Image (cartoon, rainbow, N blue to C red; front, side, top):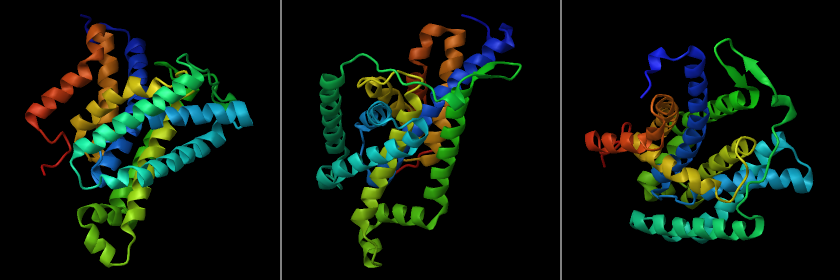
Length: 295
């Protein structure tokens, strides 16, 4: 085991950067999961597949239509949101109000279908997606060499997370969304179309996963398996932060991403399990999660 205080500052700074990059994806994905569970009470196991679809749509837009990264940042999440609308209207709407297990099994089966179908079409090998020309190169901070695109990912993720938190917690629309889940009959009595709000909520959570996929495409190769590789970690992040907690998903996502990276620096074999160890400890101390509220 290595003493982190005896390491060169550049090595620690480099690992912190890796942790922030991983944490950016954990935060975006767990934020989408928290929105869907917090407002719809559905455990969305298909979230990893929606993340993968965001990356795949960006790849197809580039190679089939010649549409580059910057337009894909908007178009691909919208396409994922449209696909999620079909899922919500055709499948999820029939299980609202039922036990959480129904949603878990339904979305788990849906994830297997999506992943299996795309693996037959595109194979399991990764598909390359180039970094946009404007973000090639590095920034030299004096403490660490920061690739420009990875720095952009951290900034874009943090900005998006803060904007969504403000939308849900500080706007009239967010208040209506939260009220629609707490007392839908009362909200509907005021002339608000609750089913439309539920659809918008699922689309928002799915679009965040799609955005994370577009940001991940130049860093990780685009593959039908990329959602499977990250979704279990993201669920651990959401549970540790508190199921349905918007702020908890953001803070815990970044925090556990950094913790995972520093653990790899100190004792590499433990980095694969440290997030799950933290989740277990948190649940023993606070069963509702760090930022969650008891029912």
